[in-house]
Image (cartoon, rainbow, N blue to C red; front, side, top):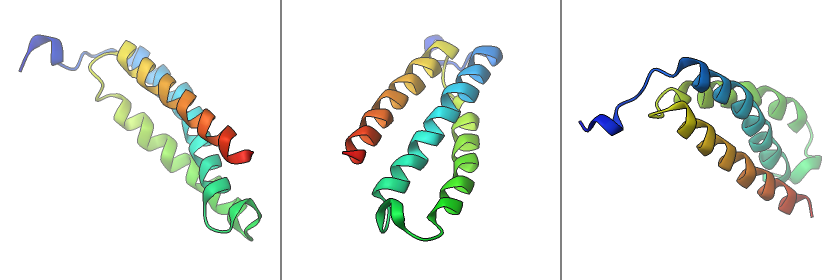
Length: 94
């Protein structure tokens, strides 16, 4: 394995990236599901499902954050995914 490709133990930066940006990404992905999912935003009982699906998505993102080679790369990827998800959610609302 190349030395540049090894996973560095940047616990603090990866944890902060996964916690903060992962939560916002999980909320955005839940919003995308709420607007684009089956029967749209007005589906009955969809509010409860969207509320409860946010935490498993967040924990999945947080756990995979530690597989990034560095904390900087984790921050950049999660930030760009947040921008993309925000744009998709904004597009769906129009």
